[in-house]
Image (cartoon, rainbow, N blue to C red):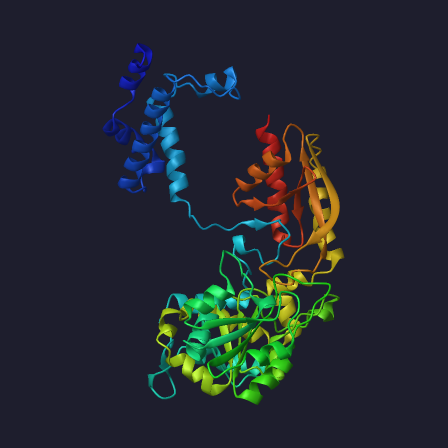
Length: 488
């Protein structure tokens, strides 16, 4: 039974019509769609009703203190018209804000899948903006004055950079793999080393992609050792494809052996079987030039003679999400004719961003400077430390006794299933605020506008400055100081 006091509270909740009238007396609501305002009013008043009714039930959870119960109790002040309108205003602001937001990546993971992977270069952004608000020659051949192919926008560039005979692009690399196998080996056997049956994340696994493409998986060798003889012994009249999958997101060390792409290519020629390599995170840059571990480049695979190579556009390449397919002309031609191509095709904005990114690779020194992902991956430690020191210096200059910033040397990660064993020395700011746990600081920073994403190690909230831009340092500082001010 609801007590008489709570019944009175329920009856005193203002009617929706009166709340609407009250709301539109404020300037804030003048340009807000009425249906959104009404929806927010109903949500707020319904939450109040639910809270009043639920207050009748005594909590059995010993973790709730009397103080918490008191704070959660609805009073006449809570159901006052002005109080409800204030809550409606907050809800409307939240609903009017974009769901997809810019965030500051202080986690130290460069290609952070959850945070949108690779930020685009300015050249890629300008290329995309130039196409976005006007018509374009997406599928129109300006020279011939008739319908053309969208792939022409980037095919010549890709072939120029990689040395491949032909190329095409689709919406992502999983799609590229699916489309290629479906074209080359539907209802036929695909031979893959058991040590290369990888999961690329989100439960997307090479065996599943092969199955969905209509190919018949034939695993050879063992998890840690596969020789070229294992491939050869598995070949029969139903074999259509020899598939190599680059293990970009994990390493097997110790007693290991794997057949090289060159060996598999030679075997493919011997039996006239197509050889495909899925590079996953394809790169045009030799990272060993930057004191990092060697990562096979796309050009290496072309030189080794693979018939088809697939890789991502939004990982180590530093462009938009795309699946890039390169290889022999006749195979690319067959892939383009596959009906699945239309379902997986790349859109005009992604295509524009990809072209803008690819053009930078004509000068690889400039590419490393201008493509954010490459710039972050190759950034020298001293440059990163200077950014961390700037935050520490500016926070300390405020002479706020509640906050402490300490510089800590830790390792960043490439992320995105790329360069998995690479430890990138980085400088982090360890932030401690009196009265708050690391988890509470992390939550508060996540609630900032823009949200700031860090990580927690050893009960300390960390901002890794490898992935924080110079113009974001002030934003981080202001967020830290705001949190301390909110404690007052």
